[in-house]
Structures are given as C-alpha cells and as structure tokens.
Length: 115
Image (tube, rainbow, N blue to C red; front, side):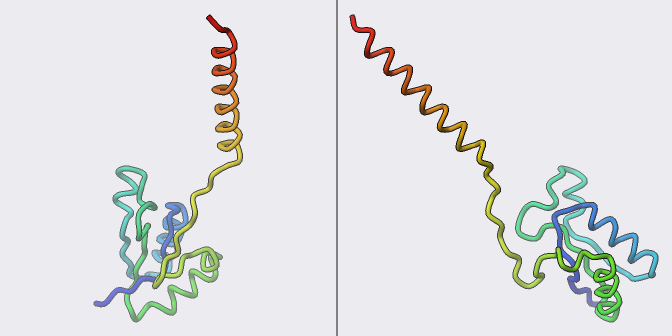
C-alpha cells in the first residue's frame, strides 16, 4: 500500500485529534515524528515536524475530515514546508538595553572615581 502525506504539524494535540477522527472513520493511517515527541517532547521540531499519512485511496476522505476539523487552514504546505522566523519578544531588547546601561554606569563610576 502506498501512503501519502495529508497533514503536517508541530502540535501534538492536532495530531491526536486527527488520529481519533481517522479511527472513527476507519481510515488506515500512520504517523511520523510522534515517537520523538513522546520521548523528548521535541517531535514538532526539525524539518518534518509530525506527519500523518493515509493510504492513497483514502486521500480524499482524509482531506475532507481535515477540512471539517478546521485544521486545513493551519497546516503547512506538505510539499514545501515554510520556515518560521523565531519569535523574539520586545522584552529581550529591553533587557539588552538595560544591560548596556548598567555596564556604562559601572564604567562611568569606575573611571570617575580616580586614584
């Protein structure tokens, strides 16, 4: 049997929901990346994330189930996964600015004290 990718995610909850829906509809599937996620909680990291594959003959039914579940708009493009930029919060820049100011104050006090 040939299996094809129908959904890719980094969220274990989405994968669990789809597995339950596929079980309810008696669709044969297999997953990749789930074991790594269960063992080290990093299954969604890396290039592939967690994937679910179905038999080629069940592709349309599986796609319909994914559409009904509302995950289709949130899934990644299977053929070309896009890389996301890391989310760096503004607090990191504030913290770095505060650190620079603190170092400047220490140098100012040190050099102005004199010997």
